[in-house]
Amino acid sequence: MFEGEYHIEQADCIEHMATLPDGCFDFSIFSPPFPSLYSYTDQANDIGNSEDFRGDAKLHLSFFYRQLARLIKPGRVICVHVMQIPRLKRSGEVGLRDFRGLNIRLAERSGLIYEYDWSIRKNPQAQAIRTRSRELQFAGLESDRAASRGALSDYIIKFRTPGDNPTPIRGDTDISRNDWIQYAEHHWADIKETDTLNVREGRDDKDVKHICPLQLGVIRRLVKLFSLRDEIVFSPFCGIGSEGYESLLHNRRFYGCEIKDTYYRAAQLNCTRAISRRTEQIGLFEDAEQENVCH
Image (tube, rainbow, N blue to C red; front, side):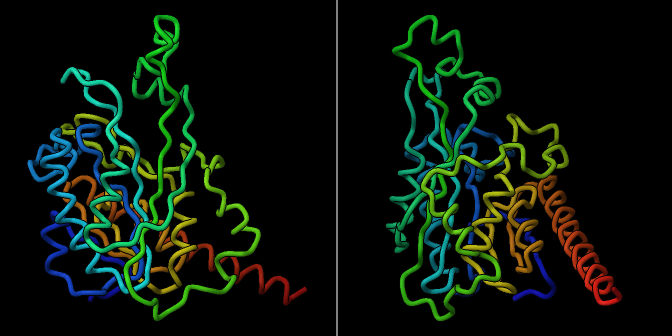
């Protein structure tokens, strides 16, 4: 479908996915745009600009999941990173929108099987500073604790496509039993929030709110858990290329889509860096082996 180790298409992912053949990817991991929470572009077809949670956002995601279910091989895994979304105070609403539940419902309607989800710890103080959420701040605590709440965790939703997996994912090359003891925990409290690629390279003057890349440690675990070496990992919302970076670093191939020009360029750069870093690691390993032979 493409030559080389990776390909990133600069396009609207829903439109581009419609042109791809059935069953062309082995694993998918991504973070969809969070409606009304983070603004990435000024384009109308950007899900992040959909403030009508039950309207445009739901419609976009419905089309998206139908295409995604078709592109992943039978019996294979899709991992979706989401969080619950605070309602917009300017609209007079309070509470949270169930973005996790919306993704599960729409994915199931497309034929995907909802199997599990992990939660990822977030630091309450850091989140209060970043989001300026009164519900988390001391000001809210001291004015009326009835309106306070804890930090919002991230979630990784695991879906699987129907059918039998023709290529079982097994062997301890990537995942040991000790790794699995750690990864099988429902709540991942050991993920470092700052373990991300350089977000500055993807920014431009049209960014309304900050971008929020998924932590590399999360991607690394899931890529190693649910794909094999030389298989193709797909990220339809590629962003600055975090999923591509970890996939290529661990000997997978990568295919991504990204609508925004600055993110697209940053993703290309990060994928190239991953290949260079992997090559350097191989060279260091070979040098160490040669030194051991000489001794």
